[in-house]
Image 1: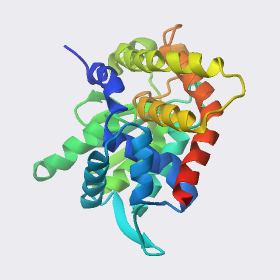
Image 2: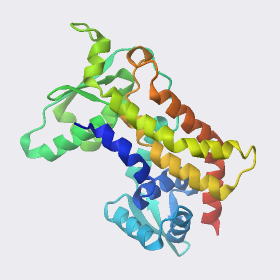
Image 3: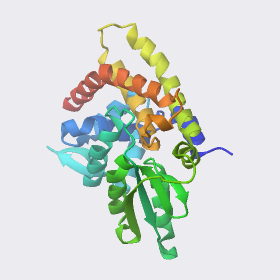
Length: 284
């Protein structure tokens, strides 16, 4: 049976062609340098660079407005959309996970999340379980979940965002017995599935890395914007599935190492030119 990570790996290439995914990346990567706001025309022009049709871009913007992700706002009489305060917080928190290099930490122990949510709130319970998985937690049993200790802040933020603090307790812990911790980790996390996500990402980056390696210091700003936005759209989910386990619990050929190297090789070269391109479009 496929794990959720198999679906994520297959989904990776498709994600960078979806208007909604690309617009989220545009706002996350570029809008905060423009006060969190872009005109509707700016978004449409940037989407056109990514081969997204105008009607698809407008439809996605309208959907984000209905969901409260974007707020319709005029600046100097120009119609546009700003990120909501909640989305700004999400983007700011996400930077630490997505845009900072994560070396395998030392083994400092574990965080345990225990919760019991009443049946009348089962939709929230389902959402909590889904989001715990998507920030790197693994289910030990029932309402008991585990992650490396460095994910404590993520767990607390998640509990507050879902307003489930009164149903949840969070502990720091050590694994004492009875099976080896390395064996338990293999049971708790689908490491093969996470590696599949990383391998799929690395596959998408190879032709892009090859292209830019041939250009030396020459930068085509439009191409930099297209490539970086696409790569970031593919990348920004992967670090959340990875709990950031100590190296002693990972396979020696852990695919996350190569995927991380590939992303930051492109990030370091393209992020600045891509941002400048987006801001120049916004000024027109």
